[in-house]
Image (tube, rainbow, N blue to C red; front, top):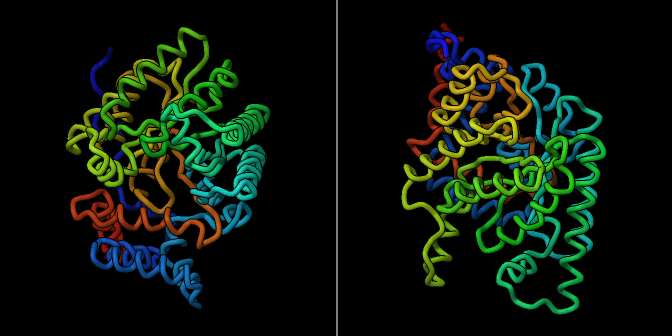
Amino acid sequence: MSSDPDPLSYPDFSNTEIAFRNKNNRELKEVERLFSAMNNLSLVNMGSRIAKLALKMRLPLVEKIIQKTVFKQFCGGLNLLDCQEVIDDLYKNNVLSLLDYGVEGKSEEEDLDHSLEELINAIDFAASNHSVPAAICKLTALVDNSILEKKQSDEAFSLEEQNLFDRFYNRVKSACSRAHELGVGLLIDAEESWMQDAMDEVVTDMMQLFNKDNVIVYNTYQMYRKDRLAKLKLDFDHSVKDDYLIGAKIVRGAYMQKERERAQEMGYESPIHNSKEETDHDFDRAIRFCIDNYEKISFICASHNVKSNQLLSSAIIKEGIPLDHKHINFSQLQGMSDYITFNLAKFGFNVAKYVVYGPVKEVTEFLIRRAQENTSITGEASRELQLIRTELKRRNN
């Protein structure tokens, strides 16, 4: 192996001119004000409670206020057609889009069938748009969650419950089949630990069916769980043995507080790492494992952590792997970590934004999670706020 490349041969995540060049001064100032507000934990918590209550009570103007602030920042639009402007704007900067219908937690069969229709529409939309390589699938939008929980607990299903599970399985299979037919990726989101094993079994079946020649179906591994690194390696061994390819989206996780509280209430050991350092360690080991096996694993480093993105981008360069190898991808959420996304794209890596869409009241839970993620003083969002202010200052000089 040759000596390490010059530092100038690596992405510069502090380059604010590249990071925010898709925003004019007015837009950047709006983002600065929004991120400043979201760094106030008390304000975010109070605003979240008020927003939920106001939407439930259908108070006038609340939906419009949300739509013009956090929705505008973190979502692509109310529907697929609304997203086209965002998709095109991202692609001008070599950033791809992953379509995510942000509705979740439904239980009525009519709603679940509608979620499948929306997913199929997203797959069809992606197939006709070369800048949209994949759609996101939330399995919790395709089945009553109680069915997944009962399946995982190995409780016997009633005839009706078995029928509901079979309908769920067929919904997933029809979506994967459509994605396979059209050559579109389908990224399956992770959920809470008490239903994840049941979901994993279904996703593995889909990979065996549809990932023979190319990776269509991806599972998501939440590395804040103590067992997920071992699960990733086990799934890889299984794929090699049974001759199919594995798709892996590597994330840190989204339900830490809920997981710990439930474990405490029910008296079992928390599945979540005791510290952020342990989570970071497993995340980086997972990325390293995927790099070492990139010919047989198509993976996505889905992270807003600058060090994790530096780890992967540096490894690709040092090991002489093509920057745009189809099995190695980066991803961040729309509206977050632009300093990572756009600098990776400028350098030539495969990078995409999660473009969430749906009715405002239906994506409120998603928006609240985004706001809460932005409250950490030492977090990546605070770093982005600092960089936004640096760019505004640069433009004014």
